[in-house]
Image (tube, rainbow, N blue to C red; front, side):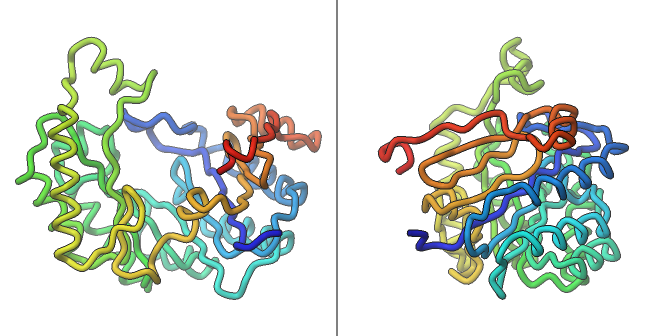
Length: 306
């Protein structure tokens, strides 16, 4: 018997340029956005019923590369198919450099009530190292635009553990992040995922990862500083100003709540079965035309699912 509302995850596979550390599936074929939205609407029609839904999360990729009208159309289809609770939390990931006040206002009008900005760093040198498309100035401007657009549930992402990073630099990053008083902060350790440009640089000695102990010390510094600013750690990498602002979607994975994943490479879990979609956008689009989009299910044992 379902005891917790379900979540919906929508993977938007478009990026202007792939970051050097990222191994999430994304493509730069923005001319495929209309075809993607059409296929996604079809997938929503075919999706199983997970029960009442209290969270929907647009992840990616860069969801803010969709037009607000496209986001509105997706949400209309989702509301028609799923049972949304009255206080459903609808999150959109956005990258600085892809949004302004007008766009963010339109996303809010479309139904987005929680915004998550991929800041990653407030230092231009670190942003360049990570391969981000925005500058530190644009990062701050995106936060100001979000507040001006009326978002009262705002999350920021930071990456720590960059080569040579020290506690003084980390404290500067945290202070910059808490200055606009976001409701939520995610602090992720930089990882060297196999096959990424960053990992290839590590392999050829062009990049020296921060020693594990130094990275751990940075995280302890982050936790101490955020606690002093009133942020509560509720998951390994996630902090919020109060329980009210804990990400509902993030907690689904920890609490083994059911969730439906839509879009290429997305995974779903309705106990005890986990299933996933084709990773490549062309395969995803082609199969949706035929009414089939899943690469395969896997039934989990009680131990694996828990």
